[in-house]
Image (cartoon, rainbow, N blue to C red; front, side, top):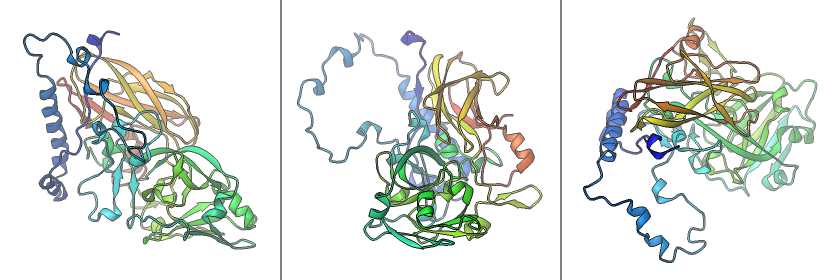
Length: 444
């Protein structure tokens, strides 16, 4: 394909809000955030559209040897722990201004628009803390397994890491991901609409191994309670059948020990279940015969229904997908070819198909699924698109191995209403204007 027929794209602007602008958002002017993104994208577009000067002889980046082709580069281990290029420094996880009053009980969003494949780099993994994060000394950390067991035990990290280990790739998604969009469009970019999502290879020991080691009550032990060591005392109930299935007690992600903000030195991995149940800084597992109904299971992480009742223990993250580029806040500069790419996932198993529409759902084409396609793991999809310069609305629709089809937002609202926070897995729409600017819209 010729270069002339390949479209160019300005990626979503990063880190452009001043402290005064952040204060404006915190005061409740949420529309300001969306307008600011569009304004910044327009400024960048104008800069990129400057024509070549008279007498232009060719691309100096090709014709003239740069310094790095003529000199001596940096030595090995110049950076003992590697870090990204300085040219990629703006790709960061970011806190949404005004989302919470206290940063220690807030969220940082992963920059999905700038990631490739399915693995989230450890430094860009989204964060959700309820009372801040700690860097805990692994030599002092302990995990206790107790309750309905023959012998309660306390494990050191060395004890745990001597047990048979396993590694599995899974996505983790906060139950509140896309929660701001229940009522209407609220945020401008995929980082803020879907960025409470990450995917890693986790290494640890199966929880069933620890339960067997302690001789849990197989007849009457119906649930386990997982408790974290942070100040919020996060506690979550997990049914025993799931605990015995694929739940892990993990100490590593993507080939290295967990990061402190992701639960170092020990966290629970509960594939397919909302992130709050992946208890960080894990210190206690208790076996019981009924759910505990803790504060984070009765006051929070419940689904408010249209009739005023609420759903409880709705933990599974249903089938969902989103186009990550082109996406909100980005700008298409030319007509021509674009690679439309995105992510799909399901808490019930593997993704089997993703369809993409460029006309707001009137017509659909099946996208390419890039391997591997693993159970309860992100799946990358791609599809070719030639933009004709006219208005367009990009959407993706995922289907998992149970046959579940990702719903439209109006279908979800018909059942769930508009006042919920959690488990919004609706189809996402990105509007492409004739100017090339892309914005978040809701179309069904």
